[in-house]
Image (cartoon, rainbow, N blue to C red; front, side, top):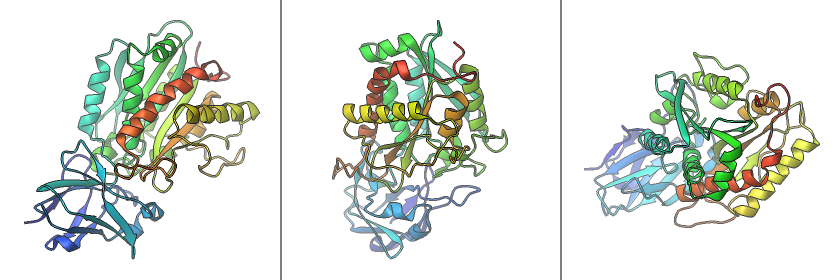
Length: 385
């Protein structure tokens, strides 16, 4: 007997019909208190050796319907190793086609990053003598907002901030953080050691624990898109942003990277803060050099494709990197990674994957090291050196 369930951490699907393995009808559930939806994650049982077609019938109504074009879903038997399966978007439906080799198989929009794995990540990092772990607040549903502070607090060190998963369905962001932390905490890595001699890294691996656990695409438990809450966060609507922003103001910020995923674009790219009122030629050159340097150390990153650039003074100041760039006078950027494969360096089996996201996270350390002397906030709101 065929069975569909998503009643687990990060799960999301509504099953309308599963009697016929060749015509399983599904719908994605919207975020709580919001209309966003695109993330799915569920288990199919009882279909071993059956030719299955799973139809997500509300795909055309999703938040980013263009994202389904040339997209392939991921599947896993053990929830550790994820591979791409035949998928096609037609007649407003996303159709997943797969013949399971085992009785139980999981399908997802991208390889999930569970709250259990998040807890494991914190536990591993917390064993390093370089790490101070703190809870700086709670989410709406009472989950901990965890901050990892890496490096010894002494002298006039610079303060670098990295945050991920403001949008909880963008799980590649925490895979990226995992790779970044693994390298930064490696006592045998000379580049990491040199950076920690001169800087403190403040890392929030998951900005949206409630949305992550509930299987949301984009919002927290109140239906707030956290990356539109930075100008005036509210403890009732967006406590996650409020507590992180307050901590940033306590430490100062000399560099900020906000890690995301993009549904439609098959590229890794940076979105800068060119639309803020204080943008100037010096910041523009630093942004350009950062992107070029990253492309040199990791060809999975590219500089040709990205979002349209806002004109100076016309940026959305509710977005994290715009607020941080303007308030602290520092380089603040959004990294976007694909849900699809990368068009530049495709992998037909895995597409863009957790392994590649981890490698990209590790590689940014070389870029920060190369440009370290130029990564410093300006003015009264920068780091209190």
